[in-house]
Image (cartoon, rainbow, N blue to C red; front, side, top):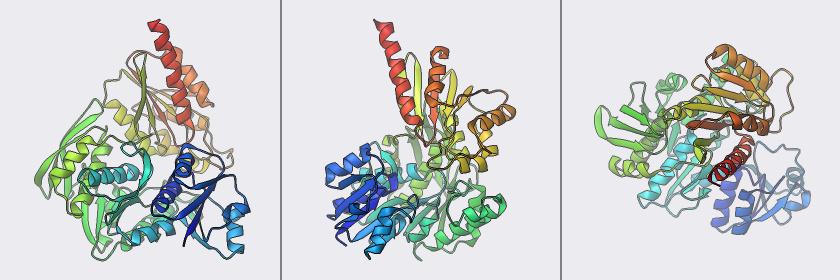
Length: 471
């Protein structure tokens, strides 16, 4: 393997592996439907980037990598197969990398990007040099990947398409088990009309993932999640549990949440091991920090050095990222796109001193929104004002059986205390807010689609109002 071509190289998962392979000295090329700051960064590092898909793009490559987002009918996949090139899924390539390292894999339908980032940060703070592949851009390195010379490889394990079964880590973390999977792919699409059967299948697949952990390895489980608790007694590996609401091996108590920070005391098997202070908000980040602590201690670190690093952890882009504060209004951008993430993000917004929390949510994927409509519509109860936009399809065809307006109407029924509006276009949604804002408001943009760009434009407009006040 000398020249690797990545189809969809601009994706957050693909680009991380591509960057690592570049830094390991491989020739890398890749294609995507449009350029981005990620493809530009890879190009500046030496990758050859093509805009659009074409059979000629794979010329010279001996290995072609593609993800479940790329269909096997893709012209580059077909050309690679016709030319007898090695063709592998992204997860297989990640598995090959992990097999050459002491792997730490983080799985679960929420929290894994933050936990992966926290572990990577703690390692680096303590003068270790891991390889990291993250599903988001870590502010400390301004990237979603980092090539290291030490033995550890820290990566997210993707359950959305069950591709984490390609990994064999030394340490595995399971943050949660729920139904936020890609219902358009196997093994999930067979069960997309029956939640009970789907959840049973998801639990079985997670159990298989724990069986992929090396026999002398460790499985770290969040005891706060009911579905995770159901599989604990079925796991045949060394286990560490963590949590803040259930009995667990590693726990946090005396929790204080204020001004987007938190403090808590941490106990291992009932014995206090230190105080945890975080500069990222919310109870969910205390859970994330406990998972990070369990993984780092399993790798041989002491609690004091872990907590020192976590105190300085600055978070990720699009994970409760403060993108502006103008005319007394704070604007937060968050990737939250499923019920648990949305609840956690809005709750975190409540830990500050905002007079009102205003959420603008762009539902993500018709299949996900339709399947989770009841849970989703119950997720906004801590907001004062909520605007729901049209659904961001992410490549899916529109489904007449679900819409953003339906979610808005359901939310009105379930949270009558919340002022709910349906405004189809995100730009119009933010424009609607401008004359209604008050000093002390917090506006949080929620979604995995393109709502982030509209939120940044919104901040620019508020900045103009600030400048006009000054002048």
